Length: 247
Image (cartoon, rainbow, N blue to C red; front, side, top):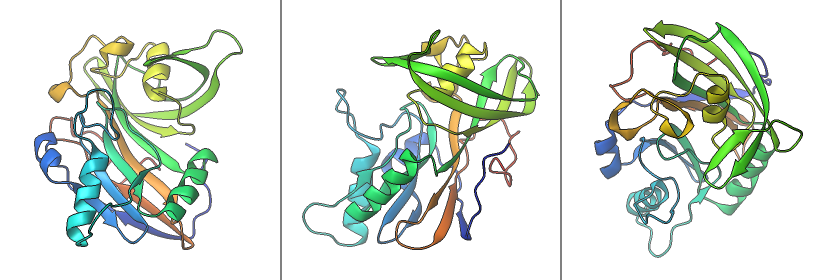
């Protein structure tokens, strides 16, 4: 897969996977400094509040910072990107308004490298690039049949075939609503467990088989590229390249 940009100093942070139940009660922190807090999101947890009023990752992040640094009063934590509720993986929060602005600019400018792991139904080609225009309607998105919608691009590489499923490493070039889920479904290979987009196969813990494996960002205040990655839960098959990260 292509699309990598030259990096300056690089630092990689890894974390062992925890069960979703344990992660709900103890934040799985990958990295923390004065400007960033990077955590592993378990499947089933919201990043930000919605109408369900369920607990969120951002609430857990604020509580973590408050306790670790003995903060009094309000704690600043800003979300600069999101993962869907049934998806697990790396989430980056900003701890300052300066960091939030600079990270948001990186995401808008598609300067962030995002690698996902996925299990999809059927046998995909060995590799490929998907380019579509996506249209959002409420809680769903779909591939446009005309010129409407926003451009979406991803690259995928198959790393294993398991019975009637394919294990993929995906490099996401854009960040549209439900992008991987919609594009893989439109290709005829929905993400396992994703009933919303046509999956007929279940996946444990009410999750879907999509995991934000790694993310690479430029540190908001110094010239350093940071790469953060985390593993999947133990109910995933052990077929993904642990030292690969999607490169």
